[in-house]
Image 1 (cartoon, helix red, strand yellow):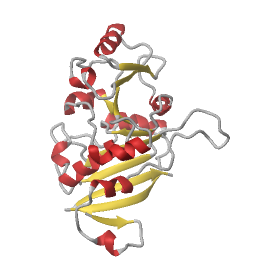
Image 2 (cartoon, rainbow, N blue to C red):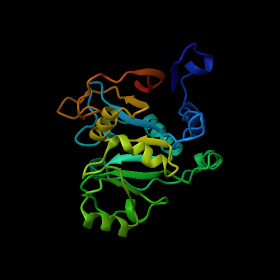
Image 3 (cartoon, rainbow, N blue to C red):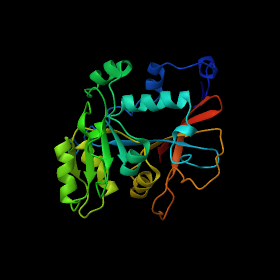
Length: 265
């Protein structure tokens, strides 16, 4: 694993070796003190919303419905690191169903860092769903280390809201109608002390965040494979009038995979 950017490079940057989790945690640390109030000391705490996605060389976000075929050992180490740093993992309902989401687990490698930052033992999973078409008997809802959040609209089906709460999930209303207002998601989570946010998609949810202008950072893993087919791009949502601009913050390479970080300008 080699750091390719930013410059200037040092000998340790270009050494091709496996980075340990502590090094990855430093490389992917959130900005200093996310969630602190504004300079005047007032207002709600702010959140930093980071996305982690993988793409093939030809732009596919998955192969046959799952992202795992595009991944690698290094990608999974970074995936685990990003989860180990986050307060909450925000994910769409379709991704929960397709990827078979389970509760986040506590990892000893990040325990001291999380304790020092006042974080819980593992990130909460926050599922974004308008219709709440979810299997609330799954361990994600019934047996998480940290209670799972369900983000939905004010007019979500009442019976599904009751089912979510009965399973142990916390239901958070972030939309006036049935749909979730993506622009309100970071603030709603920050109000609960969850300011270091990670979204793992899917493409439709990420598209909503991009359209709402609330995505602060994109961690994009570029896999050295081409899959063809009709798979969605990593962002698949409503069009925006002016493209969002991001600046390159870092690039790491291992076995032909590029692990990039982009910050919103």
